[in-house]
Length: 163
Length: 267
Image 1 (cartoon, each protein chain N blue to C red):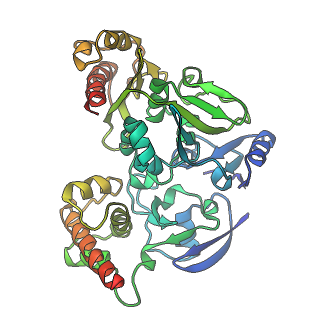
Image 2: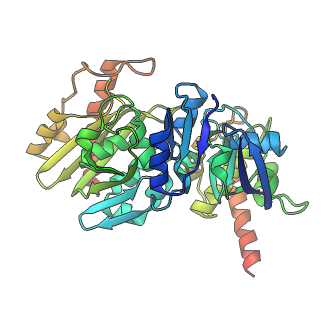
Image 3: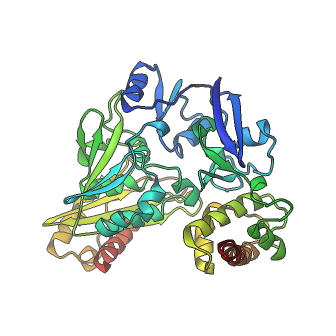
């Protein structure tokens, strides 16, 4: 057993774990944060994407023990009170999901894209940047629309915050 | 994956000592290859030594006519580094077509080189650019470093610390990606520095990355895609699997080499 201390969605967490525990297992099984999904378990599909120290990672391909001292944000940690994050709202508004399995990873990746590429995104950029996230329902069309709209909405939020 | 002992050393010396003492120890860098291999039980180390807390192993720096990249530098940092884009734009391009954004946020240059996957991208860059791999013990020329599929010159207890790339006057990388894995079915890195031209091929050879000397000779006449017209490597020694047979891979190498030269000239 080994002990890991990290911050998850703003709360400090200390857990005694088997060293082979994956980050996604720690989140889902120990902390019961089941919004982060396991799709392929081979770092292809992106259903498990969370943010570690502000950047997107595939939580099925990282040991929980590697997260010592890290700050982790999951899909449960992005809404503000009862209000959805603008990217979540955009996925709802633009019907960017059918079964919803890939959605948490899509949204966490989408926010990461905005963090890296800014809020004015074109379709080509979004499609390229989402290549690590697989959806088997919607054919991506509405997902791409949602990401572009969500990015614009995030720009609005940033402007508000600045004012 | 099978159970293992986990260590997170906070100095290079401590890491080397742990690695020396471990019966069956493996270093964990970004984990984007090792962890999937452990899940598939293709690797089952008794001890895993995480390099994530070792200081001084990251960073990108231009030192005179060389670009120096720390072994634990993430792919995403190389991809977006203004220093890399200025010194060796082909290297920034290579990283941008590797894996996907989340994988690039974790994977490291040192991990990729130590693993020496026969379809990985970085080995081609190192071989074509004539890089030097610096470990905690010595300096190894890329020509001596890659020794076959998943095999390198690294000895027991040896840890890659940084990689030194001589800055070329022109360089280009092109790869034909497997659409699902994004690994190279064939990838070619060409580099010209002074009178020296080097062409390195990844993904295609059955014993890993190799230099395509015939293409290097052809490009010495004139560094242009036309110089490679009609040139295809022998199918002997080409990898053949469910994704592509030897003849197709050999053909791809020729096409990727011409495109890599085109890209090198575009700068």
